[in-house]
Image (cartoon, rainbow, N blue to C red; front, side, top):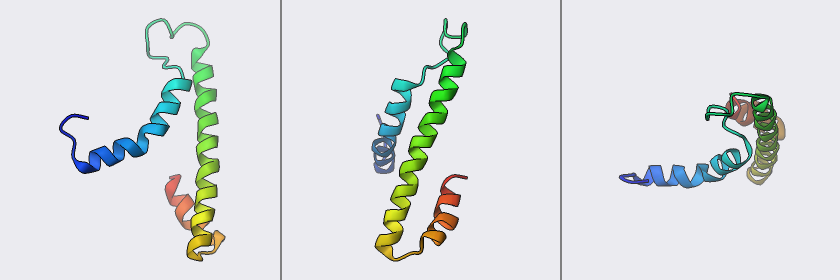
Length: 86
């Protein structure tokens, strides 16, 4: 990105995999010609599927971090995952 700060570049790199997977697999129904038909239903199903995939990895990573730091899985689930999904 042009005229980006260091934080902007780090954020761009961090979000690139998420944006790339969604852009390549979920059709944009706002484009002309996509309003007809049932593309909105397919887009909704793909978005829900990606939320499931991201949530699966987030729970696994939170468990790994909790085990590494010696934090109980109940506390990790109650605190970090609840805050991260809201």
